Image 1 (cartoon, helix red, strand yellow):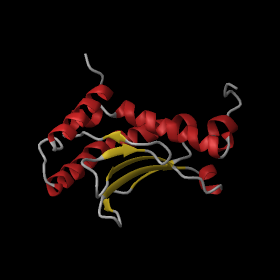
Image 2 (cartoon, rainbow, N blue to C red; image 1 turned 45 degrees about the horizontal axis):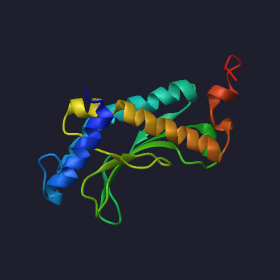
Image 3 (cartoon, one colour; image 1 turned 135 degrees about the vertical axis):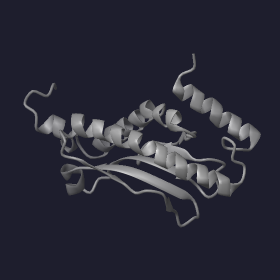
Length: 166
């Protein structure tokens, strides 16, 4: 049985081989698929970031979604960000899940603010739900990298809980 992550890679490689993205071939059709994928991914991305908010930030964070926007270069982007007081105070980047379809890209990808690209093959609700572990890894990687760049003091679960394990 294939894992969702391996299935995403196989779809990604087939798209590259076949010159399509799902059933979409033209840039215009692929952009429509991207917009739908962002809508399908929204509850999954929010769930992922709310899990981190509850566990690491003790509920002090806020999840904000950008919706689909067009980049200066002509690509499409959507971002779900988790911000919190300590992060804002030191002007660190938020923890993020980013969907992007660059102007010169064959198809869209997922990434974090500090974590690189992963294939974004979302065509229905089941595909979006199957990405929960990928989004968890992206968000956890962002959290780790932000602590590495700044300090463990960014995480209320470490600084505000007397019972937090060391």
